[in-house]
Length: 120
Image (tube, rainbow, N blue to C red; front, side, top):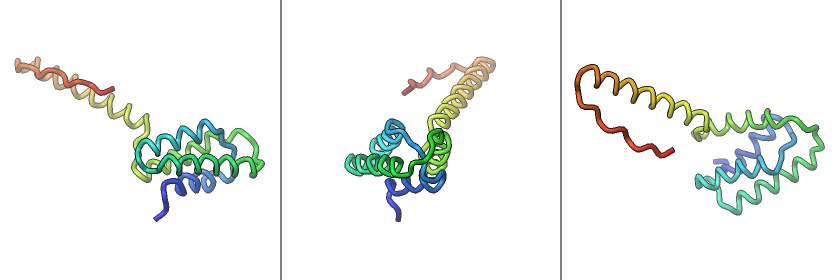
């Protein structure tokens, strides 16, 4: 099985080719994988260094960051990592359902349950 580090590298360079990637964006992606326990700090450091070396060596034109992010988003979906937009959508749907439940409880005269504490 391929490691998360190798999967990230392949997604970036297979989906877009040898493309431009800023260190900040690469670091943010790797930091997220480290935080989730899918790679170690050392693997993360090596991944960022390797990616930056490959980007410098490629000599490709700037401006492909959006395509890279699209490839990474696809990879992250494949390996089951929820994106911020996905989480925001689910949060919104939960809030709407809670509101509907409160309206139904009020209409039926039932005592509504107190709202659950929110984590975010």
